[in-house]
Image (tube, rainbow, N blue to C red; front, side):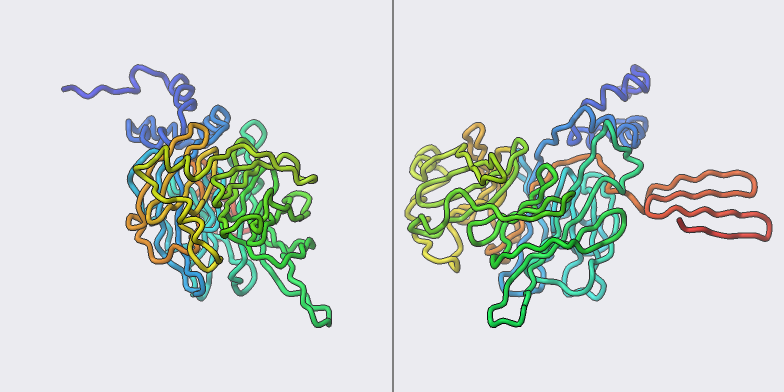
Length: 428
């Protein structure tokens, strides 16, 4: 059968317009149709147009990585749990030059670091969909067990240039330090360091808090980062104003007989708090940041969940009520929440709970994740996108003229004048 050339029937402008309306997940497959399609889809102008027409990124999966509870050595295995698919992927980040630890995910980009111990740790910001990445220096020296590095990525396709990506993302490193004022009691504070436009700097903002950071790492919503702590509070940090404050969760853990388990996430542009207790599964969204007003959006008892899905669950309430201390691993554990979809672990299996459509599907088993330690995993929601990860190293513009060679790169701008017997370079 004669092969049909798809490009013969569409001119480039029409093809550009049609493809720019297609979600990123499907475009990755369409790159294989022809060289012309790959050229169009890989162009920066197309990426900007596609983002403008697909403003809401679709959740495609969850990045899962375990870590030891008491050991500083990192677990290198990274898994990708697909939404709508039964397969677990383990080679998603094999394009990076070393094994890494997941830190944050935002609008298709992923932030990760070198595995410890490491002589010269670095930070990577990458896009696993197109396997592009950049490398950043580690902020300062040392590593704190209860620190977090979060990723903020803001891109307006109608205002921002995709060729000028230095303006488009920031990293925030939050860590807990001891502030001793010469008194017997020592206060614990969270400090903040920001990476922007190629450099780290320390913010003057400090937040007094004795709690530890747990679960979701730096949920970014509307210019504000959110971290769940282990004592009924959410730590927040406004990136632009560099202000932090603590928000109390809607219901304290002390209200329940057994120890509950919770996570935070984003849906419809709002911060959500998900709680599993002997009273059932409850979900609230934050309606007001300053009055700490939460609104209950979903509620279902464990008996109801078990009754609707007997093929998955048995004796849920009894199992949940047996957890009497934080040292015991929860039987039912909400791990991550994004766009109305909850990833939770129940016993030895992972489930996707679609709250909008009231549907539960088995995602995988712990065995599929090559599990070593399920006590403290990092789980990051992820959406496929075409965004280049601010490609410092790969985006090169070269202008040639007799006697002059100008090379521009995103991470530095270098002007080279190559005249006869004369060479000089200026780094701007």
